[in-house]
Amino acid sequence: MKNRIILIAALIIMLAGVSFGDEQKRPDPNQLFYTGNLYYEKGDYIKAIDAYLKVMDLGVDNGNLYYNIGNGFLKMGKVGYAILCYEKARRLMPQDSDLKSNLAYARSLVEIGPEVYHRNIIVRAIGKVFQDLDLNLIGISLAVLYALLTIVLIIFILYPFAARRFTFLLVIILAFFFFDLGAFGIRYYGEQVLRHGIVVQKNVECKYEPIDKSTTYYKLGEGAGVLILKTKNDWRQVRRFDGKIGWVKKEAVEGI
Image (cartoon, rainbow, N blue to C red):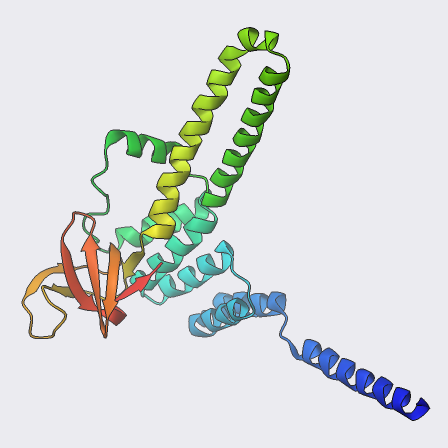
């Protein structure tokens, strides 16, 4: 019995040592990020991007990483990939002023064509109000308004005499709640249901059918935004924001 206990203890120690050794070998994301910054400052953008991508491989996913990768691609003249990364970063930190400036500059370098959906004025107005908030913050504000609305309704039920005095307050909270709910629905549909993509190559031919010999319908410029409708073999069916649908080579468009 004693020997068995010693053997089990030894095994536990060995396994703990292996686990500790694996943890020690795991790269430090902060160090990799710092290394990427050093490469970027030296002008070695390929190695900088590689270091940033290794940080992502460790499970780190934030706007600053996409922003830095986008800067590297922009320095390398790969404007389509730069816009792609900036758009990914914008979903995570929509209020960042440097990101907005770099994205606007990258777009100014290419002819990207129509970029706006034909939406009605109400949808555009709601989107304008919440454009600087990411989806998570809109969701949090919606949850807060829902909790506040619930509290007010409970008070009205428990103290009916308060209903007359504070009806206006209830109306105001309801208005904000439904406005916020509409904004959340619009943004969720736009970011989670629709699949957006960015053209990462120059002068991409958009064809009527997913075959090389098919007639070219129109061309897409590098950095243009599209909706990815479906993927078939080596082709993607995309829709330009003016509604035109066609097929492009899969590697020509990357999803945001």
